Length: 187
Image 1 (cartoon, rainbow, N blue to C red):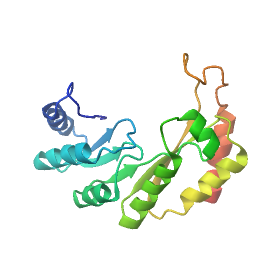
Image 2: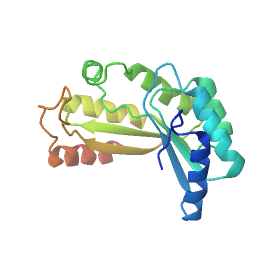
Image 3: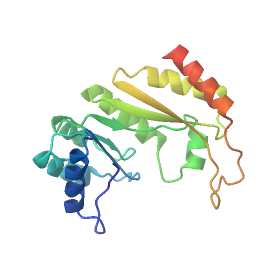
């Protein structure tokens, strides 16, 4: 289940959803939303605190590099299972072009904070946006350095209409397969 609270979706709806999720026998909740480089500390801590008041469901969070070190410590104390921070592209220039308004450095910093604090990490690698094989290998070796990393997801680039990359070719499944094979060797 993915959820982010705002004026349209009050916290009460999230708590109702948690109870429904549990009644279905599900044991995990994934809270996710967009990146805000100014941070979502208050909002996510409020959500997790409210959930913890009614449930001990496993919680994972994914809001990009939207947490301070203090928030990571608080989330750990609240038994959040993991924090996802997907680097996606490990090439600084390509990252800036593809994700204006986001920060690869802040994403790396969040992973480093989670590592220091002993918080489980999840990440994602996007394949086929124009990165080189060297970029992918550097990305994999970087992630290998995190003892708290327990899950890496791989995604093929897909060009969506009406975006800056609408004319960029879709990533071949063979490129993804090669990257996963190399990841298995490295990691």
